[in-house]
Image 1 (cartoon, helix red, strand yellow):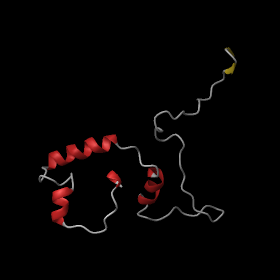
Image 2 (cartoon, helix red, strand yellow):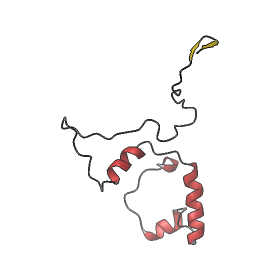
Image 3 (spheres, helix red, strand yellow):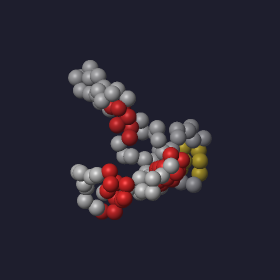
Length: 104
């Protein structure tokens, strides 16, 4: 949870208006959108976004079973940029590198 706070299962409109940074000070639509865009730009890509999209696009239904009777979520390995510092696999080339020399 943000700020290491305990999750709350119940709230009131009053409490939210007083404590929720998204609702405090009765934001205008423009200021709310600016706040969300600024905040969201700093958040990492959700770890399970590709999994969730495959189910959400189908309205909550899972993919049809494959020939073996199992259902699979298919995750492309290069659809989205990885986290900073993550190395991508090198692109296939006809060059082979040996030590410091490149053979062609």
